[in-house]
Amino acid sequence: GAGVSQSPRYKVAKRGQDVALRCDPISGHVSLFWYQQALGQGPEFLTYFQNEAQLDKSGLPSDRFFAERPEGSVSTLKIQRTQQEDSAVYLCASSLATGGPSEKLFFGSGTQLSVL
Amino acid sequence: GDSVTQMEGPVTLSEEAFLTINCTYTATGYPSLFWYVQYPGEGLQLLLKATKADDKGSNKGFEATYRKETTSFHLEKGSVQVSDSAVYFCALKASGTASKLTFGTGTRLQVTL
Image (cartoon, rainbow over all chains, first blue to last red):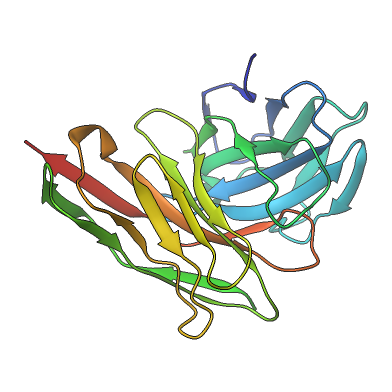
């Protein structure tokens, strides 16, 4: 079946613009995660949903970052008033269950955001 | 807080050479440990995992053993292939949490003929 799908694949924004990044998880997956991956670094956790509930948003770097998953499926990560330091690859991941020790995450290919 | 440290790359090897990528971690309790791989142009994929001390994870000829005494989870493969060229990430999941992963910075492996 289809994997985790993210769109757009690339996004160029002028500083100060708002952007919206979309994630379509694998059908039936309960958990959904957003990560930010700066160039040459490992992914860093942003936020976590279990169905439509946002259970952890401790990784969001500022109040300019907002994520939602209103129907427990598709999720959108919104960044307001983008800054150059927001340039990164934004990864979405989903999983079937809700947090066992060996739970497997399935990652999308990411959205590469460049803020000019 | 939790952290993962892995050796810097790139690691360049000839085909059929032995591979070791070092990974050490800092965490409270008993985390689960993972290796993810990112092939060019693709998303991260789980390569192998271990959930408790002395467990050995293995997949596609790669293996790693969870060593609590040295807080390590080194990745090894006896004979690498050109198709193994990718970026490898070590990661941990703290005990008692949802699947929030803490990643290392990644190690790029280049295998040449």
